Image 1 (cartoon, rainbow, N blue to C red):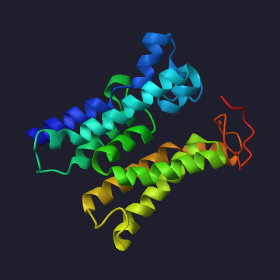
Image 2: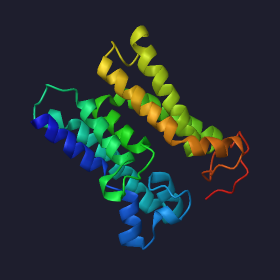
Image 3: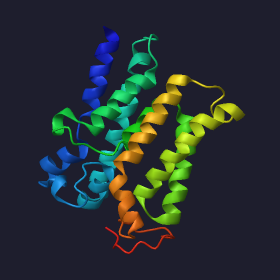
Image 4: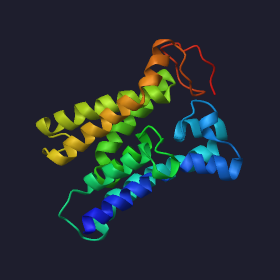
Length: 214
């Protein structure tokens, strides 16, 4: 019964549409009508500014971390915590409180890893920051991180780096999270190929995207 309750709580936590609510109740703007139309961190930064974007990022990360640590807080070891965290990501993508149209899963997935495998998250964060500096695109950085997550979760246990051994549930969940991120960024990939993707106002922009920075 506790496990079912944890799953429900995790999904509801993930369903909190942080950027959408901040835009609506504080700024009087509907994020769906501006920028990319997405309600996640990147579009919140772009449309509402750094303060709203930072709050959205932190809350979206916290959703994943809190959901993941629920079994630990209540000393329930009958289920892997990362499996509970996964339902927060599902809630973030298909939020009950926002007509089942949510974000792209990056921040909440990071929160899940923060709660379960922080060293693995640190490895991905280094990849993210490096890619962002080189190419000036959050979307591309997210795609690259998803690919490196897939590589790492399957390779690292073989060589004893960061992940000392295979945890099959962890491996499967990370594979699913990475796959969801790749799928959710399909439109971004199209814009990158056309050299029309949004840029951050720093970095080298090595792919020479033409669209103006937001």
